[in-house]
Amino acid sequence: MSAASLTADRLPRRNLRLALWLAGFVALMVGMAYAAVPLYALFCQVTGYGGTTQRAEANIHGIIDRDMTVRFDANIDSALPWRIESAARATGKIGSVETASYRVTNTSDRTVTGTAAFNVTPEIAGVYFNKIQCFCFTEQTLAPGESVEMGVTYFVDPALDEDTDLDSLREITLSYTFYPAGNQGG
Image (cartoon, rainbow, N blue to C red; front, side):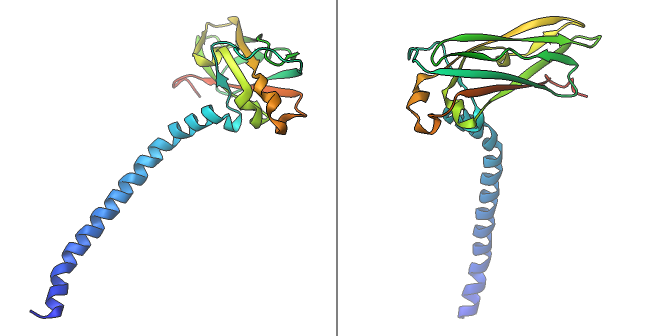
C-alpha cells in the first residue's frame, strides 16, 4: 500500500472525529446559553452585583451608630394599568429593621396581576441591603379600582461599615419596576 492510500483511509475517520468534536462543542455552547441566565442570577444574588439585594430571615448582626437614608423609587411598565405611590424616604441606624409601604392602585376596569423586579443603587451596596419580607417575592392581583399597601421589610447589614469603599455612602435607593405577570402584557 502506498502512503497516499493510507492517508486516504484515515481521512474519513479524521473528518468524522472532527465532526463529532464540533457537534459536541455546539451542544456545549447551546447548553451554556441556557445556563447563563440562571447562573448570572445566582451570581448577582450571592455577590450583590448589579444592585441585587439579599434575602434574610432577620438581622442577627445588631445595630450600629451610623445613619443611612433609604430612598424608594417605582417605575411602571406601560402595559400595567397601575398607579404607584412610592414609600417615603427613611433614615435610620444601620442594622435597624424597617418597613416601608408602596400604595398601588389598579386604574383599569379589569382584574390585573403584576409583579415587581428590584435593584439597589449604588450597585455596590446591594450585597448589604437585606429584605426580610417583600411584595416582590410574589405576584400581586388587584381587582378593578382596588388599592393596596405593599410593604417591604428590610435592613442594611452593619458589615457595610467595614467596607472602606462605602465610607462616604449616606443614601441607598431601592427601586422597583412593576410589570404585568404572565402573558397579560400589551
